[in-house]
Length: 276
Image (cartoon, rainbow, N blue to C red; front, side):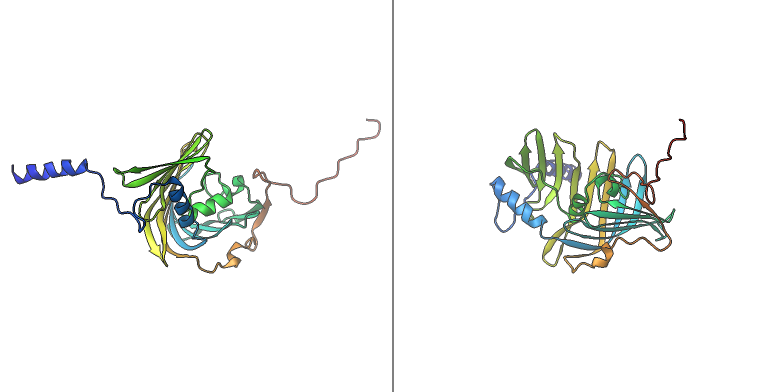
């Protein structure tokens, strides 16, 4: 057998081999409840994040990559700013869990009102509660409350497959066997979205994904956040979450559904004309 044929044979042979799986210090886990609890603990140990990232959006309305500064603190404190290619500000979103403020630089307009999913989605083209968005940006997967759990080991992909069941809904989690962090989440049976985490890095003893992807198939929308320089679990700067409109900006009040509200007290009804 010549060298070329031997090389091809080895490639074909190895492509059918299962991946070598590196488990954590506990070795291979076989109990679904244990993996579930480890996943919850490992993803909940990050409570704050601040730094820079690249945001890529793919949707029917817009597509492209922009720079972003973000500061998020559990449970629902948000501060997001986006910039164009020339580092000029585009928009900023601030939320404290109950109220939100959104500044659009192009129109010099500040929108404010309840921090509802519809209002938060003015910044990103997906409808998410602020608390869920904070969790996702912190590398966490919102988990359905399971009625039962099953666990398998996928030797081909080299991951645990932890499936959560609740009625007709299932959430399939691919879990890194060493870090016990979710690398992929797929929700089926109820409206939802898929999540993927990659490029894990270690900072201060914490394992954190350097890349976060969200895909909402019904909305034909995909978001990708690729972190650049970030700090984890630092003391949060609470001034970043103050809902103060920029000086001179037009202020627009909106309701839960994002509808603009009239400015000032409602007008008194005009009395009917005599004899009408």
